[in-house]
Image (cartoon, rainbow over all chains, first blue to last red; front, side):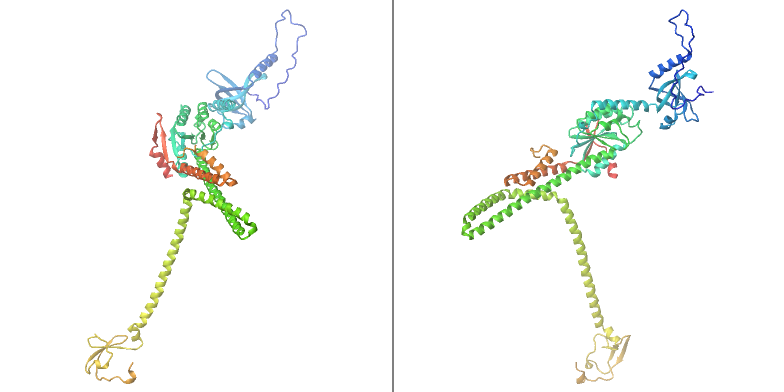
Length: 482
Length: 80
């Protein structure tokens, strides 16, 4: 039978006040300093001492005899090499654990000591277990976080702005991890002329934290590095632990250039994230942040440059129209005697303004043109795009022009072939005409007098030829003369 | 580059001020033109700064020396 055959209930029943123990009616004889407790009294005092003193304790040990009763509470023994303590974890606390406690597991337990009077036993009522290592670390993490927060290391006012145009981007991470590749990939794609300086460090295991801290100090000393990304790719919480250590947090806080922390995945939050000027959820995101800052400034400069040109153009237009107006007024004044004075005044003004403008324009013409040219070349990319569009449409036009030409040729050729066909002797023969040749087929006979009676001639009909002998010649009649 | 321009951020800030002043438009012509020239100078400076850098990836070693990054790092990137 277990020692815990009487399970504790939850919530723990308030200790019932012990009924006043029955006192003997007579006074104890002759020993006034001797105080005799009842068992219940003593047990009550022990309970008070233990429960007040050990109201909240953290204890590390190995679980054994874990047993969950049908009430849902778990009873166990927590032990180390030399001692053991009975313990219980109530159902509600047990359900909140993120792992399943089992025999042999080393844990850090948080709880309070209580005394169970009916059996004269004390035990640990645990509210929380953490697998060993993690628990101690979590505690250290919380304490460090509080300490650094008190020192003001997380203050928003400390956070520095990232440079718009980093001369060199520092990266402190492992060369073997995914982080460095992710960062370079993003920069390669979106920030073509980035200058990156990588300080390789260990990012997990013994000595990693110190290595990272040293890396930060070293890279900040490289001339031109004006932003540093520090981090690593995803991993278990143990893998990321170096970024929770004080030495890293302080190195980030003390870094003379703005820092971006980029540790693990979106959901991983480390001490480095609290201290860094900017927290990026991942290494890729850190690179994106640098890039987008760069893009923002690029767009801002372009906007400003356009506004600058527009403002001066506007100014020029207003001056020109004023000049025209004055010229017009002065012209009008000249025709009207009573406005002669004003006219003269206007003319003088016009003259003066004209002189000033001309002087300016003459002086500025060359530089102005040069500057305009500069502004235009800023737009070179768009202009190239325009040229390309025109080129493409030009190609289209050329192709259709060639098509039209080809079609013209084809039509022409068809007509020519038809004409040629109608001229072909074969076509004539098909209609029943025949051609007469001299005997050796060197000439067509057009004149009856060109052959003699008895000559052999060749006659070509539509299909085949005839060899014929001339038996008679008839001179042409007048009617037949063409 | 122009010694009157401190750095990129300063150049942008100054350019912004100049554009605002010009847009308000109540300056004498002479100062307008001067501002405009300065504005163009600043704009050129910014663009030059944006373009001038050259893509480089370096490794800072334990002895504080800068070496070109191993090809494997950059190769991987161009494949991606």
